[in-house]
Amino acid sequence: MFTELTSEEYDQLLNHINECEACMELAESMKLMTNIVNRISQVEIKPLNSAQLTGDIMSGISKSEFQTFNVLNWILSYLDLRQVRFTMATVSAMLIILLVVEQSKPTQFQSQYSSQVTTHSLKTTILDTQNFQHQLQNYKATEKFKLLNSCRNPFNESRYTAACLREKNERFKTI
Amino acid sequence: MQYSEELNLIKCAQGGDSHAFRKLVEMHQPFAYSVAFRFTGNAPEAEDIIQEVFIKLWKNLGKYKQGIKLTTWLYQIITNQCLDYLKSASRKHQMKNVEIKLGKQIRDYTNHEQQVDDQELLQVVTGLAKQLTPKQQTVFVLRDLEGLSVEEVCEVLKMSAGKMKSNLYYARQKIRQDLIQYYKESTKQEYNEL
Image (tube, rainbow over all chains, first blue to last red; front, side, top):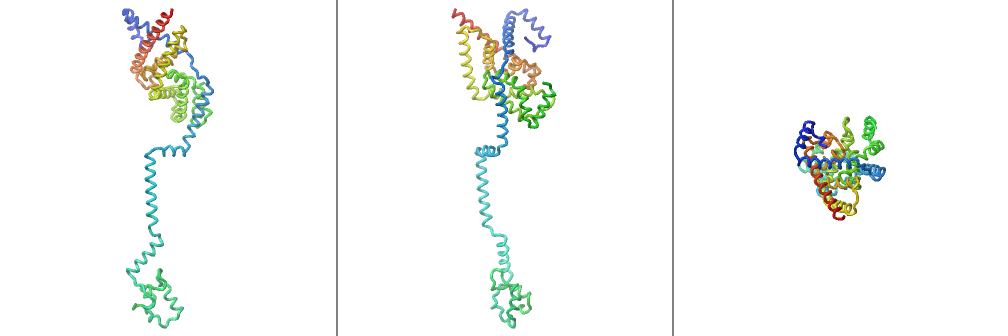
C-alpha cells in the first residue's frame, strides 16, 4: 500500500496516521481495498478459445490487407462521397464540352487548304482558261497540259493561279 | 522467449511474414486480452478490441523502433483502443445497460447468500471502474490491476508522474467508497434475511 510514496513521505504518513483517528480509519479502508484489488489482479483472465481468437485476428488481418489492395472497393468508397461525385460530374461535363469544341474545329488538312483559299483570295487571282486563251495559241495539247498542270487550283481543276502562270512562262506576264 | 528471438519475429513480420506475426500474436494475446477485459468486463467486447489492436499493430509494424519493448507499445495501442471504445457514443449507451445488469447481479448474490469469489469480485470492481473518468480508469487498470510500475504507466500514457499519481488517488478513493457502499448493502441484505 502507498508504494507510490517516497520513503520520506511514507514515514510522514505513518507518523500522522498514528496520531489521527480519522486518517487511521481511512488507511484501514484503503488497506481493505488494496487487498481486494490485489486479489483480483491475481485472477487469471483468458479468452474462452485462445486458438480461435488468434485465427480471428489473422483472418481479420488478411481481410484488412485485401481491403487495402482492392482498388475497386477503394474507388467505390470514394464515390460514396458527395463532393467526389460532384467533382467527377463536373469534370465529365467539361470533357464533353471540350470534345464538342474540338470536333467543330477544322482538321489540319482542312485548315491547310482553307488558308490557301484565303491566301489565294487575298493575294492571287484565280483564272479560267478563257482569260488567257490567246496566250495559249500555238501550244499543243500535251504542252498545254504540262504548262498548266502544276498551276491548277487545288479546289477547282478547271481554274488556274495567275501568279503561278506568270512564273512559268513569259507569255503570261500580261495576265 | 528471449528479446532477440522476439526481435527476429518482428523483423520477419515487418517483411510481410504472416507466420512470424502469428507467433507474436500467440505470445502477446493473453496479456492483451486480459487488459482489454479489465477495461470492458465483457468477453466479446474484449475480443473485438484485441482484433483491432493486432490489426493496428500489423499495419504499423514498420514504425517499430528497436529498443522499445513490444509490450509497452502494445499497452499504448490497447489503452488507446479501449479509451476510444469507452468514449464512443454507442458505448455510453451500452454501459448504462451493463451497469444495470451488474447492479442486478450484485443483488442476486446477496439474495442467495453466495460468497463473492474472486471472479465475481473482479466483475464488481470492473463495473465500478467503469464509473471513473477514462484517465482514472486507465491508470487504475494499468497500475493496480495489471501491476505496471509508475514509470511504465507514465511511459504508456505519456503522462507526468504527478498527474498519474493524482488520477490514481482519485480512482482508488472512488473505488474504495463504492466498495464500502457495496459491502454495506450486502451486509444489510444478509442481516434482513436472517
